[in-house]
Length: 114
Length: 115
Image 1: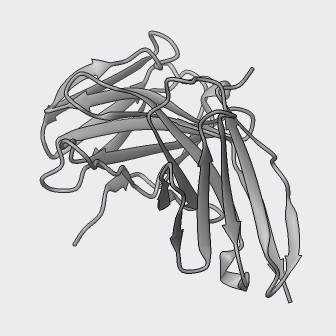
Image 2: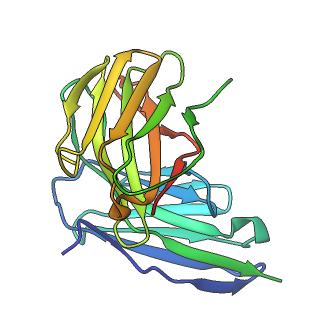
């Protein structure tokens, strides 16, 4: 079983739609969670952290369910510019020296259409 | 401010040749990561440096891969000899590993093709 699992998609949605992505992780000791965004042929960039109480950043809402080991990302009023691959990322450990050992999902592709 | 800088951006080489990828982390960052991304396996961590010291190289696929960080502003990832299965995008990322927040910032990547 993969450490971080995501539906690869693609999710094709019309502009203005609401879309939700889900992610499950296998290590119950995982400490922190993130969503990264990766545009085609570009590097991954941090979209938002995911907090236990859930958090919102504009049109984006992230939720965490530790009991079910499940993370979600909701995008409201989707824009053409939201088209990208969304990577679910889990930090299960910290290295000696303090760096985060991140495990990346393979990503969910979103295509927002006119 | 300059982000993470990687060179070359694209590399095409023949099987058996040596390949050297270069990375300049963000100034002031004390952690550096090398990742490899393929369609099949996604993004995988190869090696992690903290304060220029290799801390975890468990992701390095085999002895053909080596990485160095001679100073805080430069790192290399070398593949010798290269094989077609090494074809991938190689990303370097850096962060400042403080107590609470240490977001990793990725460079633009090097797209490697081994023929």
